[in-house]
Image (cartoon, rainbow, N blue to C red; front, side, top):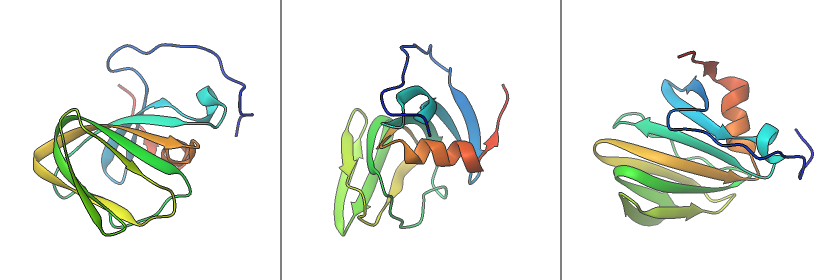
Length: 129
């Protein structure tokens, strides 16, 4: 992992980022340890019913901004319906999952520190476009 604080500025245009297939879903990594010095991961994902994760926990805080669609998050037994342009915060160590309302949802996901994006890069299959 890169040293925290060892970062450089950069910008990405729409559709840019490193794309990986992970559990049969494509994730576009916008930032991970290499860019943020381990402080943050950012990814974009479009997912459909049947692709929802099982209940799980992370060692990182996780946040989602819903770009399109609607879904319901369950975090430690609390349910949050989040629609387009909505946001949810899921604290580290708390079991969570979500289910999709409708045909698909497009999310911008964040984790701090950067563990989740790094996991996708380590264990996913790089997709070349």
